Length: 389
Ligand code: FAD
Ligand code: DHB
Image (tube, rainbow, N blue to C red):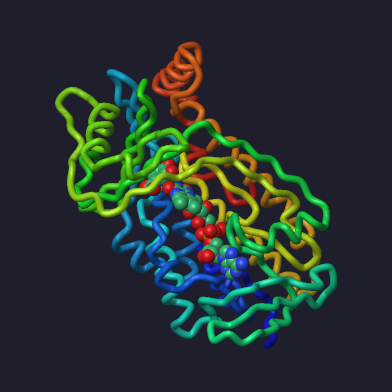
């Protein structure tokens, strides 16, 4: 089998890259080692930057997003006694959208299977070869058990944090930076109308809590917990009690309902550089992970593949190497900005350390509530900086 770009991984990064290339006349094949049902059911991010919404819409996969997505014009920052609204259009002229990653993935898969490039689920034993030459290839076993070879002009490693691509790039010569945090998130999805118009990021002495949503009838809520916490130890009642305590505000209550999903999510910052070895290019979680606070993971993946798609079109159609040569540096500039912002939001809002740390966090939160430039800095980063940062 032969294609121009072999894409490993059908997360949002791989699927969108394939779509962007297809629209510009470049063939690709996407290989995914999980089933379609598994990929479509995986619950992850929920907030899209304006840039992400525009990219999906321009790529022809924004119809349902435009109909069902919820535009959000700000967030609340809460600390005991105060719930302060940051008005994004006023601060920076931009907004964000609530639309689940599961829905983005379903829309991209539907477009792909409806006349788009090949998308093969349930493949196994994926490996890459000859990435330092001009004709790299991917070996894999198809869903029917047959070993196959995919000859390519370039390969995109969009296979997430546990994929096979990053180790190959790192073996060329690379470096990683990592920070693990002494806390995790317990996330729930509940059939309950959100009791808030905007997301609430709450600092509390017992730990951080986040009030998010997926639709006018479904709430998504998170609690800071210890990383070793077992989900079995968190009954639904215990979760609702903790949420009520951490979001407490006079005259206001969390809306409860049936919990349909609950899990504990680890938190880490991780950056791997460079994003390229020869004809193998990394994008999305294959190259970097941010802690979820600030909702950057999915948006960064979209920004990476937007840059990568243009670079591959230039390489394969115009035979010019300038954009592939600069891809890693250009993408990493934005990755580090988002890595800093996610670390900043995480460090400001999660309880850890002693009372001195708590006072520093509260001082920073009050500063954002009182100073327009401080609030604007947060708003600009949250709603998304320009693609070429
Ligand atoms: P992925 O979505 O990880 O996709 C990679 C794909 O590659 C997967 O489908 C995987 O099955 C496939 N794959 C892996 N190995 C192979 C292989 N060898 N061969 C073929 N296919 C392979 N971000 C936020 O902003 N907010 C959140 O609330 C949030 N919650 C998250 C919760 C969890 C549990 C996780 C893991 C991430 C969360 N994120 C969140 C991050 C966000 O979901 C990711 O940044 C986003 O999914 C990145 O997309 P991606 O396509 O790069 O990677
Ligand atoms: C969600 C996740 C985030 O990390 C965040 O900052 C905001 C919202 C969510 O899953 O809805």
